[in-house]
Length: 133
Image (cartoon, rainbow, N blue to C red; front, side, top):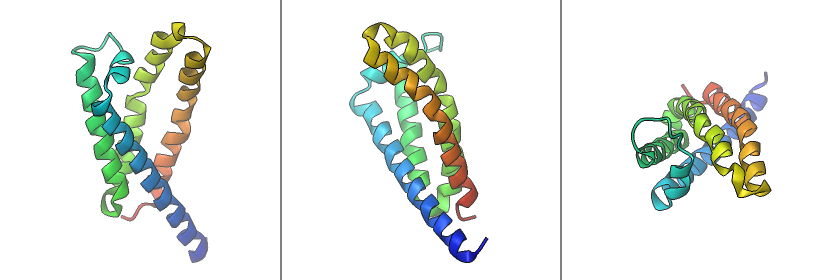
């Protein structure tokens, strides 16, 4: 690979990392500002209260987002993002169950969100591979 190609790939990965980081920070903040929608999709089978999981995932998202934005911590942030995306998948599956009776728009939205985890995970892995060591 030429240095020009590697440079443009690194720049694209940097932009992806910054966007992913900003999105995670924004979503994490929403967990604190408007927690009720997040509470409703926490699987009831988990021990503890839904609010605990809402707030803990909000902290995880803000922290992961900050790690992704900073170049020195981007590799760790990318791995944390992979873990986060895998970790919240059960809540996304549960949201299909919880929101099923809310009508077709809710059904479509929750079902469509499930396969979106795959490109989010693959993008985080690409950020990991191209992040500065």
